[in-house]
Image (cartoon, rainbow, N blue to C red; front, side, top):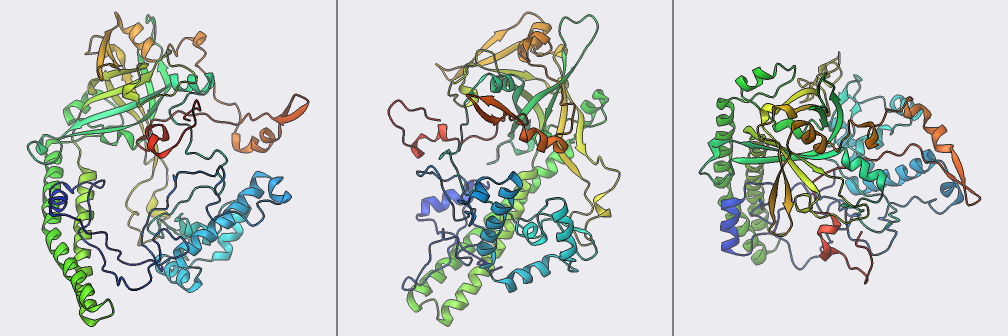
Length: 542
């Protein structure tokens, strides 16, 4: 692949910044590599943002959220027939095929410079023995799936000559936004446009899980960790004599509850099929790994900095083509690889660190949330209530792990690093038992004046559960719904072609739309980054 094998980052500009990076550079978000590849300032230097130059960088993230002034941005990936009647009036599949072709060509140019030999070289390295590409393509076309080359460039799974799956064949994934963005912005986050979206919001939660590893106490690493995501009402249990259900089943993503842990004696009380047990010994082991890899990373920092500084000085004195510089660069790159290895190990240790769950929160927007209102961060919205649960009130009733009769080792390539792992789907279901409350039915809501919280108390468990779930179990609430009595995939074309008459014109009925409310990390939301946008007087921000 014609991407630079090593592209060293900028040197820190001051000793104070360097010292700060040495001390606190143990997070993916703030770690800075102490090196830069020296350049011959007299030579030509292509811009790193030039997507037509495949040798200009390695692993550079493609910008997928750039400010847009023109309401339609082409991004260099516009299909050649985009303005033709065939494209404009074509079916969804026709447009997809045209878009896909232009997109794949963009990836091909970016990754290999359009060089087929380079592509084949990387393909042969990743996939061995070689697959029957034509056979793969014939089947893919029958079921409207990407052909072999398309799948490889997208880093999708492909098969080898033994008809076994090769996962992650490229080793990384490049993404680019669609060539046309008719809205001209990055979306309408933090906005409830109508009652349909509000109903979806009332059935959804932001879920937060707090864990603690006391082995990190008094170190430069935080002993507490907060994991969060989106959850939604799935079902509830009906019990005779209850005024309102108090046992609720809340769905979320499996990766969200990965850090929801209990000690063995705590998990035993749940009597559940699924559990995520952590022991005191395991917590200590993971903390020790953080300390060990952090020290190893610190040890590689200064040698990396010194060798790159020396190489820069030699480049300035003798030039990049001199033997002296080539020798210095070779040493700097070798040391840089040691630093990269140490950083990767430390990043993995930080990712793996976990502790014992201490608190689970469900943050729920209540019925006072206004349609059309622009919302702030969740913990600053006065209509967002916070319900806290002790871990004893919550248990895992389903996790999408190891659920197939087959095993990945049956269909993965023999040399796959994943063949001993089992399959998973990113879904989990938690049981919340409101009747086992230890907080005397207290919830919190943000105090927008003091930036603190206001504690509110509800008299009984039934009203407490009712308020937390927006009276979902009451048919009169209008929130309950039934699953579609048909398979959407098989009925898609029929639904897509249905129309209704509006103002004398046929317009699509659009019965297949799905609406979901999510609570992802939001620091890039346009509403929270006003400096990125300019607004006209009186114009809505979103």
